[in-house]
Image 1 (cartoon, rainbow over the protein chains, first blue to last red):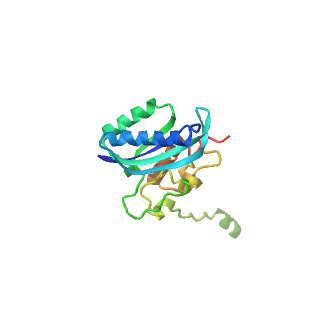
Image 2: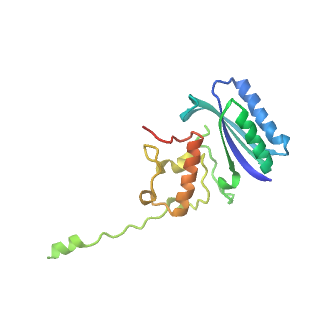
Image 3: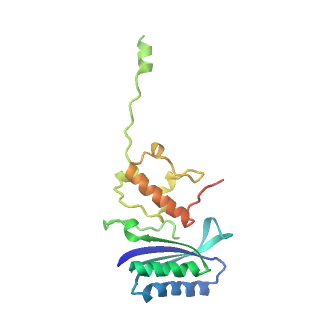
Length: 111
Length: 80
């Protein structure tokens, strides 16, 4: 088991309910394979720095979870075949989170 | 003669300290844009080490964080 973080960009033309359903589906992919969700945070619609597939905006969704390598691979395969997802970035928590407990909140861009 | 000597006199080197070493940063989060905004030029390029004054270790971490932020469209690859 390892801790991971995924940041997913969802197409902006989806309605709020569709986005919520998709987020639940994503959570389902993690929990189905003995994964455990630590943090789940939709950032809402945000302007992209450059267009991706001709979209200039996107719904950002941040999720942190504990899972095995296999679960992560499974999840990424499913993301790849989901058309509503524009892009995803998966990183290990150890590469972004300090081991020291003294760490400021990352709140600058989430708003 | 006195004057010429003064001109030749070498400029005293300014001691530069890595900004991240001062703050004792060990890992850089790609989401924390405010932390590395000033190490990206107006054109979206990563500022080289000779200009930023960052140590090698932190420059590597910085480059990784910026590249991640670019991939997920938080930062632009280039600004025209």
